[in-house]
Amino acid sequence: MKILIENLTFETVIGILDFERTTPQKVQIDCSIDYPYSEGNFINYADVATHIERTMQDKKFELIETALEILSDSLKTLFPLIAELSLTIRKPNILSNCTVGVQNNFIF
Image: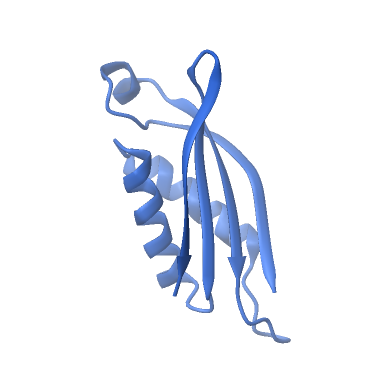
């Protein structure tokens, strides 16, 4: 089974520049989770989305690469059924002419 969470959007403090450490900015996150679904044995996508947003806001990461790594570890710990995980973190407003971000695929 695959869970898709697309365009999860919220504001958080993230970045290494001075203004990024004090002013929250918009991030967009996409998450794809493969896991062995069975009746009564499932992953609640609302819990996943809430965990991602809370982690990003609580940790106030400097690098989006670090955020990606920490999120993957914490999601796997919280939801041990995850077999494969794809995460994308985008900062849509940091550059005026494009959206930037990072993506990684994790196989557990």
